Image 1 (cartoon, rainbow, N blue to C red):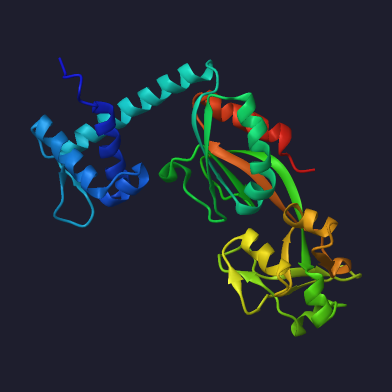
Image 2: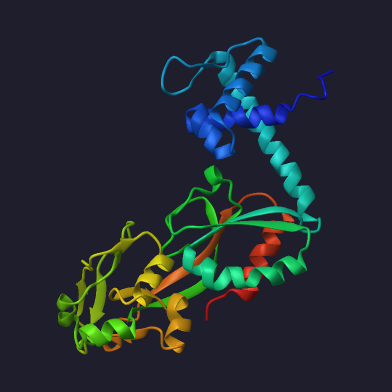
Length: 301
C-alpha cells in the first residue's frame, strides 16, 4: 500500500503541467511554485518510481518511453479526479477560492462595486481578482472566469454575454478650453489623440458622416497606455482626446469631468462584454453562482 504522506495526484499534476508547457520553469509559473521546487519534486517522483521520465539534455523536455506511458495514464487519472470533484461540488453550497480575471474598466466600474453583495450571499467563497486588459490563458493562469471585452476568438471556452457598450470620443473640459472643440474628424489633425500600446482589432477611430461614408483616424498622440483605466486618468488630467466605452466614462460625463467629442460623427459601434470559462462536465458551485450573479446584476443595458 502507498505511504499516506505521498501526494501522488499533486506529483502527477506537476509532471503533466511540465510536459504540456515544455519545461520546469513554465510549470512553476503556472502552478505558482519555484523552479527548484518543481525540479526537486520531479527528481523525487522519478526516484520513487525507479524510472527516468524525461530527458533534460535539450531545452525542451523530452519524454522517455516510461515517461510517455506515465503521462498518458496521469492525464486520464487527473481528468477523472476533476470530474469527481465537479460532480461533488455541483450539488454543494458555493465555497472555496474563485479566481477571476477581468478587464480593468469592467473590474473597476462594474465588478468590484458588486463584490460585497456577492460575498455576503456566499460567505464561504473567497474571490481573487486580477485586473488586466491583456487576454490571458485561463488554463495556464488557473482562472475560473475571465471577463473579456471585444470580439471573442474561436476557442474551447464557453461564453455568457453580459451586454454591449457603445464607444465614444471624450476629452476633459480643461483640454477643450486650451485646444478648442473639434467640429469635424479633419480637425483632429490639430489635437493630441491618445491610443493604446496593446494590439487591437482596429487601431483606427471610425467616423460616419451624414451620407453614411465611414472613415478612420489613427491616434498619434504623445502618450500610449496598456489599459483603459490608465487612459481614462490621462484624459481626465487634460492630456488629450481618447476613445473609450460608455461603460467606462458614463459617470465622468454625468459629473461633467469629461465631455463627448464629435458625437454627430459617431458610427455607433459597440464592444461586446462576455464572461468566459472552461466548459465540459459540471461547473463547481462557486463558479456557477458567480456566473449567475454576473448575468443578473452586471448585465449591460
